[in-house]
Length: 174
Length: 199
Image (cartoon, rainbow over all chains, first blue to last red; front, side, top):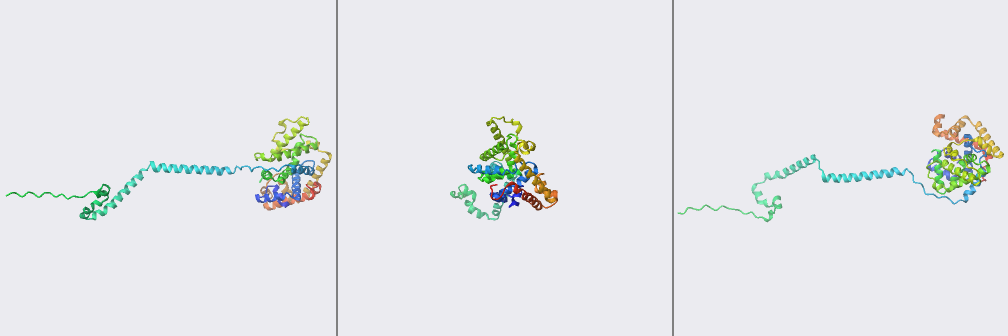
């Protein structure tokens, strides 16, 4: 335990060891060691009081402190939380800007090369659709023209084809 | 972890209701504070009264301590104000504020003036302790004496001492502890810190 107290004085304990050591410093012998080591340090540095370790003073103060209500203060907010908060704010701002920008671009502006590609794709699609028609016989197309997409869009099903035959030329009268 | 961080952790423990943690700070700074107060209040008994009042005030004010300054700087201000109020209450002239500004807090060292204020008995005890520490230091092996001198007087960290002494950090830890224990073995009877006493 005394070795831990020595390291505690020098700030060489990690957080868990610090808590353990502080808890055990409630014992009288551990506190006596803490006092003794500090008196040594004070005398080596020349900052000790001429009245020695002050054990009589400490005993009186201990009694006075025992009569005091126990202090319970709220834990102070550490500045370490600030960078995390800032990072979240930046991330939220970036996300909002991205969504708004994406929406605006998709509505308003299509880049010229996009238009060219769209035209090209439309041409290819039209050619692909048109290509088979070349192989179909005209009789077939004529028979089914009312079902063609164009006819369907323009009211084709409601139209009937009528054949018009030219009147036969009049025979010369005898 | 530096001295300030150790104090801060002890303060945080005290703020969570651990009175022992505050007493550890009292033990650490009681002699330094007594030396400071001796400059304002000459009578040794009054110095102890003012010091006790200052520590109690500091304990009550712990919830307001946020760690913006070092604990000792904060305690120093409380002690100076307590001493000034005490002198005013006793009808004596308090020193001007410029005599004890807070820059004094960290580097206060004025042993000559203090010897005038200590009682002959206190002075004798102090001299005996100093003689014991010096004698025990002289009796230490060279490597232990160097290690504790670099730590306590020069204020080097374990890492720095390991570099200076060209040895592993574990050796430094061990040497400093063994040096303290060797001196403490001579000093404990004089301090009256038996296990069955409060201090």
